[in-house]
Image (cartoon, rainbow, N blue to C red; front, side):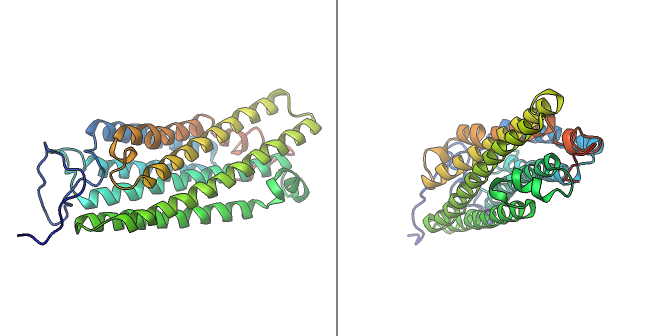
Length: 312
């Protein structure tokens, strides 16, 4: 008799396990990833990649655009490996390396997206207060935090959270390959997600404080109405909307992981498509259409005259 513990997890009855060296005894996803979703994601993110390259050429808003380009590239690589996890003859859903690599890139992609959002907030603070206007920046900035402090705190938090999540996902793959309980690895993943949810919630609070401060400043200077005021509202809406979508995606990941391996959310790809894939696509599209470079990039509305852009 075999000394190996019994298989505990999802096995597709229609797809035999090749039992190769890099294969797990189960499909770690909790379902067999669909080919159509992976192809759709690759196509849409490729289109968004080209769109943001075009925006970079037009606006010369390097930091923001390069971060979004990295976001789309990571998503494309992630979904290529997810494609490799689809049913044969295209892929092998039992392959551990496909699961780990797709998880790494799909989890890392929103880190660049979040950094672009943080950078946009600091750019708006600089643009509305004017170049070198430290006093004005303190009035606009939530809690009087400097732009460097905002970027430093939240980018560092995202990096830490992502490292913990990727480590947890890799350990889950190893545990499943060895037919050991992935509970401890899942708890590591859960800790990383919980920290990220908390961190981004703090950022959302600061973002809404900035909105309150900017509204006061624009009302006092008479710029709340008219071209600049309307444009600012439009692009702020895109910033807030994309931020909420990123937060929604992170909350889904936390809820999914809290149920453990084989939980209801993690065993139905529809949740992944609606709450991981869709929010990120829409967020990147919003930041492409309402690109902040049209405000603070080259020849942007807020980069001319007495108001300068801070993200170049």
